Amino acid sequence: MILSCQNIQKSFGIEEVIKDATFNIEEREKVAIVGINGAGKSTLLKIIMKETAPDSGSITLAKGKTIGFLSQHQDFDLDNTIYNAVLETKQDVMDLERDIRSIERKMSDTSGAKLDALMKDYTNKNHEFEMLGGYQYRSEVTGIIKGLGFSEDDFDKNVRKLSGGQKTRVALCKLLVSSPDIIMLDEPTNHLDMNSIEWLENFLLLYKGTVIIVSHDRYFLDKIVTKVIDLEAGVTRVYKGNYTEFAAKKEELRNALIKQYLNQQREIKHQEEVIDKLKSFNREKSIKRAESREKALEKIERLDKPVNINNEIKLSLEPNIDSGKDVLTVTDLSKAFGDNKLFENLSFEVKKGERVALIGDNGTGKTTILKIINGIIKADSGEVRLGAKVYPGYYDQEQLNLDPDNTIYDEISNAYPGLTQTQVRNTCASFLFTADDVFKKIADLSGGEKGRVALAKLMLSECNFLLLDEPTNHLDIDSKEILENVLRGYKGTVFFISHDRYFINATATRILELTGNTLVNFIGNYDYYSEKRDELHAAYNIGNRPDAPSRKAESEQRADWQKQKSINARNRKIKKTIEETENSITETEEAIAKIDEEFLNPEISSNSAKLNELSAKRSNLETKLDQLIEKWEHYLTLDE
View 1 (cartoon, one colour):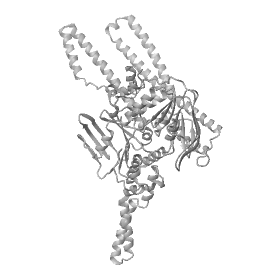
View 2 (cartoon, one colour):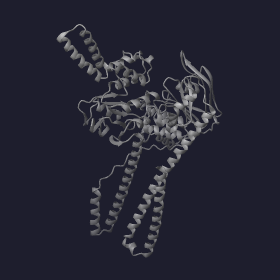
View 3 (tube, helix red, strand yellow):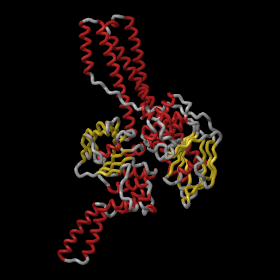
View 4 (tube, helix red, strand yellow):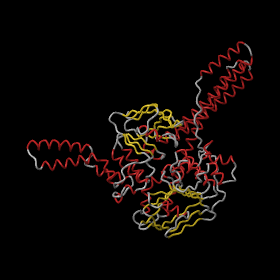
């Protein structure tokens, strides 16, 4: 064990953020800490780092072990170049290298006993230098800086002139170069493009130390972590596996807890009814029996009602106006800012009902394309044409157009005065604003909460073509799942930019990658793109001429994707049938057990007609049970 947290509690004023955080982390484990926004994840990391003191509880770090922390807010020396800012992390190695060079110079002018002493010191320092990775530290620094998205042309840029996201990347470079025993990362992928995220995934997978991650990037977590610590309602629960496995186990556990709670509530209600009935007889024996049952009922350890976050969409989002088949046609589009040529001669189409993801490295011009389509900026050349009856709606995470003085309720009801109070409430609830949350002022909301309000307004609009720029930024996982459900059920057309691979996987029907000043078309979701990327890059001749692949190649790609999609659908159907059959088996077994209990009832045992009826019913249930088990075994074989 390298780190132990026991009974951590933390409150801010009257708000108890963490009630009981208890868990252990082993050496070399890759661990995620997950929970909704405001659950206390960042607070927990700061407590572990001793930046914030807990109200009670203990943190134990194994003796001699070091922790490095990348928080969401950076504070380091800005008067340096990117390369030197990262290189200074290896100051101990550079000092040792300087000492070795100094000894080498002294050795040339020394002899006798002094030379022997210098030789011994030289040997020891060389050994230490080698153990610290001295022979490769500069290449290691260069590799990490490049891996996190900086080019060699960026090495000499002054840190002070960088954007907030770039500074965070520099801080991440410094942390990875320092190689602590425990790396703690708070939202490390927020400012990385896809290539950098994939590089970081591989780095962390091979990292010989322990990694603790707070992230809403589910694809990233799936790739890396083997343990998930869920912080919910101030209490931690530990799950083995990656994020997808955790989500399934949590849902299974939640359902089991709800079932236990409901069963106990039914039993309590039953006992209370029996007690009331016994008391109503008003006889000494029945009253004593009632009192005995009351004592037994008082001893029952009451289960708390499980927290059940409602992430089911209640809205049926269907545009009022149906667009034509051709939603968007872009022809020979070009744009440059000064000497920076983003793209040229881009051509593509978006058809009705498609959900198209536009992806690519930072700075390739993705947001520029969306703004050109929306008429915010002009292209240098080319044409953008919207189809018949196409009404676009634009979501820009930086320009949400919300009134800070409004409440959430007022913001939506003012925009759509025709909605009833119930419809406004349902809309708010669909985007995780329930109860008194709807009366929060817009000015008091977090960035993610404001994003949800803006998305709710956009979804209620009459637009039938959604243009979304990084809609999942600052959203917690529950909010992302809300949005995924909304978009999958949306009857219009969607064109969006995102670096959230899990989100793309869940929503996109097609991917356009902006790379090499051209667009590469992938018919399918992110998993398919990841599998076929190199093959399609070769077909598009990336790096030479931006030629489109042949119609045959695109047709084969579409057929391949449709075949894989069909296989996935079949597998999902089999798993669903197995689950439904298992539930039916359980229900049938419970029905048989209930009949067996009725047989023991003295009133029934003397009633031959009732006994015959129950026997026939039980026989039918036994036959049904045999058929269900055969069906279950059949589908289980198909799933193997």
